[in-house]
Length: 361
Length: 219
Image (cartoon, each protein chain N blue to C red):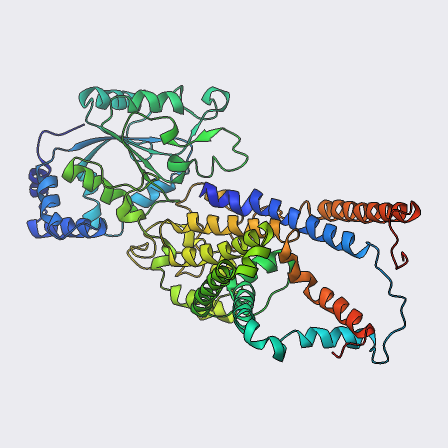
């Protein structure tokens, strides 16, 4: 439930020093690509804010997004995000279960109507009236519509919620759709990724708390601070791409030398995320640094982008599936046109309409 | 991303299907057509077909002295953009991967920065060829839709490729999709217009050489 104290008062009670808090504010301003002066605004904004009621809905998902956010890379600071918010409903993290859990959700909605934030991970199945995924007797669709109705904003985390993700991949047996396809009358922030980078989630929540507004978004509704640049453009292996030095398999000399992974299917050039800059696990590494190409997991339909190990420049599917038929048809039409031309010529010769000096072969 | 998926999938499949069908159609219709037989006695200087064909191919690689002044620009500019196109198509790693995926054939790639430089030179050269076609009255008079359109479908992949590489004006995946669209247009047009010379150039020159040799021309 929401608290009447400000966050600043709560943090002071918990023994969080002002220095520690300002460091967090500076760090958040930094990862949000805001100017240094914004750190003060963030610090003031968070300190004066009341605890933000958050209802976290989990639909067709794997809980990887929750795993990610609970492993934000500076836990002592990032754990504060759970102090900043009143997480009133979350299947994995809440103590209550069954009817009590649902009552907590309804109570939070009633107490904070128009103010609470709904975070959703997972896609929503629409096939068979949404019967593929239900919670407490409600379909995901019903629960989302009911919960989002009085929300201040909706944050879709993970590629399943933002773009349909793996449940929505071909052949999409459950009719899974993204949250933005259902909720069209509320501001929606998409934080894509499978899972998203923890700091992208906590940073966006911190921005909402600090400024009470939506950060600048790209055309897919993602915060530009985290999704403004392609991984390829910030990849430390980029110079090898420019030099034409590629790993051709995962165990060749190129792979051992850390050359570009484009040839083994890296989707970095068309993937927008902060993996190459923020990295994972406390800034230790990210998939490309670990030797595997980017899967493009923060992009729509990444699962159907033509194979993880197929280079981006190749045609997808089976581009030559009609080649045999086309060749046969071309040969038949070509032979027929030549035969027709020969026939016309021979007829013309016989009719005396033409007197060529050469003989037909 | 949907645009790129569309370009890499259905568009490329369609373009390759038309390209292969069109190529086979052109080859069959051309080689099964009648050939006029020259029954006249050959010149005493007539060479074997192979020798005549080879000599004509080599002879046409550079200008004849009499036409040197008049054709020098076309020749040099022609070499520049033809070699440029070959380097771009067969030297850039993503292009090699595209070909490898279709045919299984691959070879070493050139550095991307070198390809970008060649791409700019090729682009300028192609523009020069267009300007020449505009400003030269005889060239302009004999130019047909085939000439203008063939130039366009050759120019666009180079232009879009350079823009995509430079990330100019739009997101990379959009520019990349536009590049694939332009390549698809080129593939579709290749068998049916004058660009078919990429396959027929040495065939037609061989035929010309054989005929000229039969009539006693000195090759």
